[in-house]
Length: 228
Image (cartoon, rainbow, N blue to C red; front, side):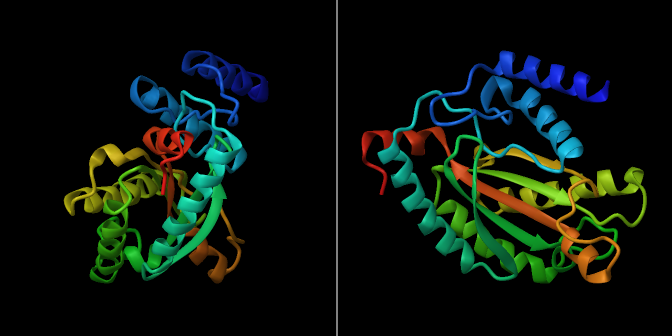
């Protein structure tokens, strides 16, 4: 019954946000008018399937050549991200099938236990991240906070949200345009990446993930063949 209700909700959201394009499935984390609905559905998906949809809905198809240009550009973004201290960097794919970059920051480096205030060590890394984002104005960003399974959802869920928001607030305060952020959310302990039964696993699960992906303007430039 829960699965049927969930699928009905997702299908309804897809009808509201519009059909996907030839580039992929489209995104439930929409920008503009669909942003609020997209964010809500994104969190529901995260809590139920241990995954979430990354990317903004696009209005145009992306050809093979344009996709390759975006991939090449994202290689440059990944190289810049790799220079940021205390961040784990990997290549991922967004909801439109386009190359994107994921950065994971250890929550223990960013925050004191059970706190959402950034510590001095984290600010150095995040300042480096600020410079990187400001050099890539055609990218969009999602920020997600996560905790380990210690404690209850009543504590973990708001803590994960506050930590994600703290990172976003710091980036905006240091010059990153707020328009670059599509979704800032927390998922509590619902999306572990490691075994919560071990101390090492719990440390990996206490994290803030940042996803960097192509905006509509980057896609348009790629389709026009002008993206560098």
